[in-house]
Image 1 (cartoon, rainbow, N blue to C red):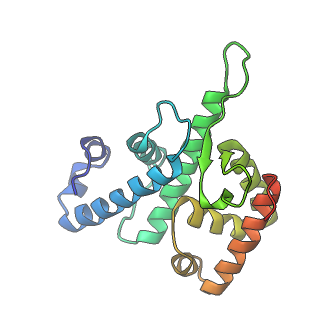
Image 2: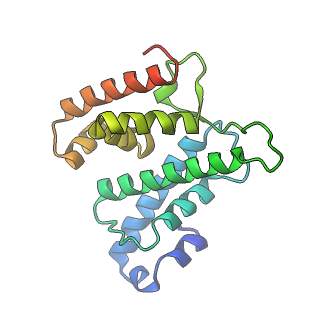
Length: 186
């Protein structure tokens, strides 16, 4: 797997000299592209594509020391950055110089598959997730790790230091809350 030239310019040359770092990063980079493809599937995204989403997420993390040796924490951080990029992009598209209606950026995923309309506005999801975070931060974190980072329940459990069964229950509660907030019946 070859990492794009843009990705190579974003990471200091000294890190690329470490063969272990390069191998871990290339594997994670492929996974980040996969996550970005899933997040953008079916979205009216304009100038936002998989590569742009991955690179914009990395730029959001500029100044943060990235440790790619542990997959879970890295993906959690990257997923949060991708979420911010998607929300920023949706807000920017909604800002109209001439006072027009807000453009809709949609996100089709398993979280909203039970909804009658499987495409839900990114900003609606963000508002619902923020509401959930004020009620129960761990539930919001589980959603972020599973929904945005694509992590399995066992990985999330290890990352959060709880049992996998607890994560599964948290996911069900969070999913029900979000579907209710989004106007779907869980």
